[in-house]
Length: 345
Length: 129
Image (cartoon, rainbow over all chains, first blue to last red):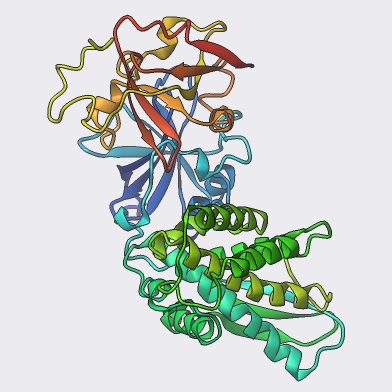
């Protein structure tokens, strides 16, 4: 009788994209034959000069890392199989590398905390990445803790307040990820006279969010305290959460900044008329761009460059859209500031 | 003309056509000794590092610099970088120092140094580890 022996096939990866190059390659992504993503980090070793530590990571965690919602330490630790591997960069097997599984990660091989993708030396585009170009943007559950006395109107109001903000942030994320986003035209379509322009803009953005990425209420547990579970693109929710936190900071001067930008634009007769009807000079542009950048910075809105690109570098349109986003964010922040609801971390 | 021999590089012109002579461009680099020595500004090619397939040969022959010191401070937390360097120097690149290509998205600068340019004198210690 012969015993059955499980033969473990070696795992091979192909080098995909350099992310950090500093005194040689420090960090890159690789793909297995089945297009599973690995993140590979250079580690010190007395014997092997170009040794790398590799871990398989999910597209969701990789996107979080690329959007600076997760640091490199967290990304490596998120290994989907809880396994870690090594290989030597200067010892390829043909065009690939054979991974060797290690039992544990030796001391000194993990990066320090707080190293984010902003430290990369090489530019990265999701669109050019064969592993993510057609992969779905990860959707996860976000839990909102609710407390106090809630009536039916409150239950309807909270998701509604989220919707415009979410559609806006999502549109910019999608545009950043792929230059061909369906929502891009919305940023150039409206004359931005105010009123119906604004309503039409947000309505259009919402309708262009793919069904699988729309904000959805997955569950309500009505107790005091209770929870509302929202299903959404997590990166977008995180950005809204960061901005709401800035607005509700006890020392926030955002409302003053908002008013100064809006009043300044009004005094220059840049509001209430379409961007095509407006005559602007260099002083107007300087005022609007400087104030808009400051407002965006303080409200932790890190998508201003993307927004400006989508308005075809029109600072008046960029600022008008930013002001409208601020107003919607403020309504959500005010609701959360009552203490009746809070993001659960 | 350049410190490193770029004529052997196959394919496109090196440095690329869009590389410019810098005008008082401030940049930072990790160095192995403080004060730095000329070899601290060698390219990865000179240091014998393995070139990844997605980085072209011309860039591999350049000196890698950063616009922002904080990027190097962050990178100093990488396991193979940690504890290996003596400090960070600030270099001010002027016309006559060479040619550069700056990447606006990453803040990274590729610098092809002219032969004879005294980079050690042009640098000051920004941080000692």
